[in-house]
Length: 309
Image (tube, rainbow, N blue to C red; front, side, top):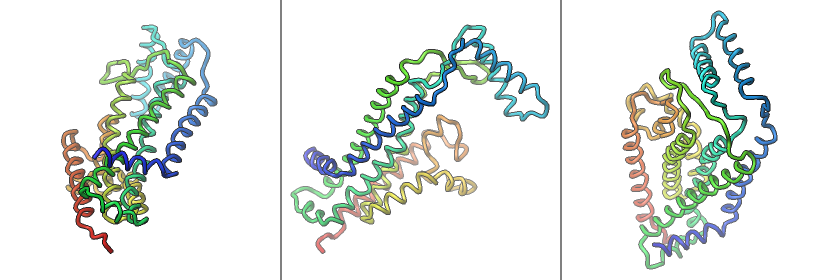
């Protein structure tokens, strides 16, 4: 199995598109970091002066008549946090920070997912389009192992891009923004707490892997069954970007909560659920069931298809 994966990995890196996607990812990180640094407007005044000015403006806004209730609650939280900062002498963060730039690196998982979907969609279908599938299947190796090696190679490429994304973001962030000073505060159930920036970042990263995994498995399924990378990429991207709309339109029906698109795990961090009443164990169970179905169909189709013609 290891030799099969090594062979697929070498074939992957012989394709120009593989290098192009890696270069695009690196350029985006460097470019975004440079733009953020160039356009960042850091207030060099004493932080207490800045906070006092913001506090004054928030109080003036709150005193206005016919103010929206949600906005009033938002202002009250801001005022409480500002007063707490001044009383406890807790400085806020200034401008762009290393942690916030790392958050951008996690947001790039969307880019990484797109690039990995392209690989997963074409890694099987390209063998049919180029005619190399016949030569591949003449080897004394089972079809199941061949398909497994292709699937694992797709995931390896995705995780490699994730590692590159996080490493490059960290390097660019440290060079341009350095280690930030100051503390972020938030209001939780009427209590002011310090934001666990790195904890939130780690949670965002591993929750994003849910959509990453399902998108790859779905693209791999379509590419294996229909032998069309264009169809696999197009359909996967369509569902990824319009999935929330599809779920919203179907949310009034009982079966909506059983659609895998309704279970993007990132919603458990944001608190904005597409379907009310779902839980993390339920979402994980639904995703696991769909993942198994995708794999069963992929393997059944690949192992049963006649390629002698």
